[in-house]
Length: 348
Image (cartoon, rainbow, N blue to C red):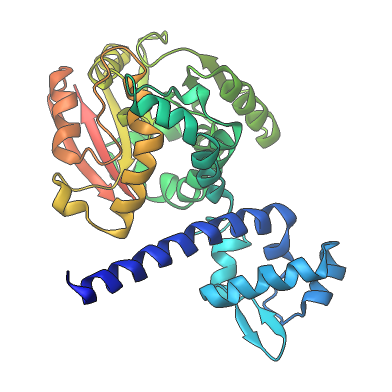
């Protein structure tokens, strides 16, 4: 027995257990508006924060102390401060690094633990629609800041000739649109174009429709319930898959259907979680997050559908390219990337 190795591992495990407990505290703080109440970065006592938010001061002291111990907040002489850099991640929903809302996804893991255990002991299937409702809201809030920061200014311009089409008036399909964050973002940026959001999950379609109405783009955005292999139309200039292709049971079939639905000079925009082509490439903090999430969400959802290819959230660029080549596309390239996403372009 290597005593040093044991102690190092115990330290890592305790750190991760503390991290899981802190994410639960983050979810509570986000829901109660505690971070927003501290977003001015002015030091505050638990009692003053309680008066400001209507929360119990003794529980707030414990919550704030946990944040100080975790390095999420600063503590001096009984006062706690949320640094402005941390506020960008925890308090500002318009920030490109806002993650507090997306932490709700982690809550679904615990709500759905028994469902995953059952899947592990049977056919591996756990469908997207069978998750706890906080999964759907959390997923929207996790991805939306990245779409706001990168989709219009970086990802679309990285595609060959797509932005001029969108400016002139294009027809766009957003497959696997969920709550429509990506669809609405594009519609707001390109008022001459028409957008169709597609998802097989009826409650998400209802929410997406409301999101379009709230954003004032409902006249140019339609959301429809269909699968990635059954939606209608053959005149799309652009078909998008945002962080969803790897979740599908038959991604080759979905790509093939996209090829049939595109105009001859049309484009597929594929946004996928960032990953290398081999496990050893992904032994990173981002890889850990995506593999863990894929265990609960992506892979069991794929296994719940026909074919059940089970790509997983860390499929990697080479595997994704093969999906499109198998579907009949002749061109596939990485257009750009972020630390969290691969952005690829496919053409017939």
